[in-house]
Image 1 (cartoon, rainbow, N blue to C red):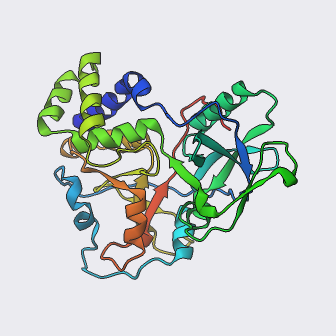
Image 2 (image 1 turned 90 degrees about the horizontal axis):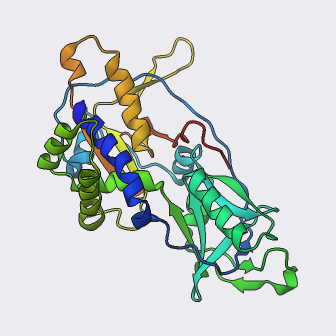
Length: 336
């Protein structure tokens, strides 16, 4: 339990140090352009309580083995419609014009990019930076459903033509691109990206060092962990399109069911490492069994794109019993 606290503390303490290292490098002073993207946002939420069996902390490499059904049953692949529904309640945020057309940035002369952010704070920062370069731009933040844009926009290799124009310009001034000429980037929260890198580079020795430090995490120790995560992580090396998903193998939730029906046990998966840690700690603090209180969680991190690829293949993992939980904005943080 203390090891989990140390990981969380290390990530949070390292954020201020890592901010200049991991800051989004893709904004430029180039004038933004707009592209027609339908507003497809809608959020539904579920929840419950969880529990689990005692297990030792395991490696990330065998996540798939740990999640397999005990019965050995093979479950059918999820359809595209099921994947869209599974992702549908997850909000992402993008800068658009007043009509909801997406703003396309040009980091360089040969690249046109539209960004979708999981963090409304990061999206707001992008909006503020764009407005600071030209306060006459009529721009706003719009929310989209990840499920609705997953195949339609983010992973669509056969996109139709897209019209790009300066905000406020007439359609006759629009420049026509094929869908493949505009790159769509999905941007994770910087804190969670750093957390994923730290989890993948942390050794038992690092864990012991953090245990000893406890709540007195020094800048030197945080800097050491950050540098190792930034240079040695085998995955999540990019600041976009590599989205970490966190889970604890022992964690389960009881999904509310209709009256008289047996509640369904599900495995929660989190975009936010901090939310997962807080949920686990809240549950463990309520345990009366001293042995249970000291249970070390098996923390794992997966790549969202790889996870969806696994879901669309027959599997011994019952992905229909997994629940993806959206990030929770920090208390008091302003929304879009």
